[in-house]
Length: 154
Image (cartoon, rainbow, N blue to C red):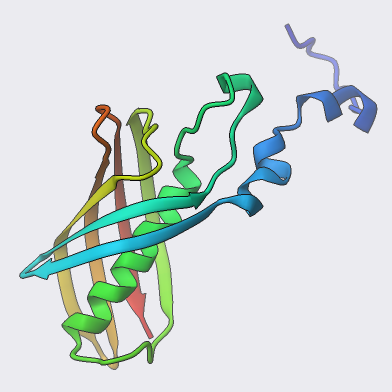
């Protein structure tokens, strides 16, 4: 239990608590988009992790980090918005205004991560494109993440 007295922690007091993933491991993770299907107000995609970080504190097993899911979901929104706008290549920068994430059950399958993006709102905003979308991320082992991203292309 932490006392009510203010304490200055020195590096030697907290360095053993540092997460290897947050310090360096995330830099080794590489994901790839394998396929994308776009239809009105929805995008479906498959993601594969081509390079992994395995956590010693999780029996050296893979589990998808919420940060990684936010990265590839953001990329999928950028793809969808460029396609929606009729652009044939990346011409605009993606800006995230707001996001929320929820890990319901761990995603452990690194080769077959399914993403469904459902568009809640999309509109032109001057020369920009505004979008609000829900993402459902699953694997065949019952893993489930839910994300909501509000962003725009400028």
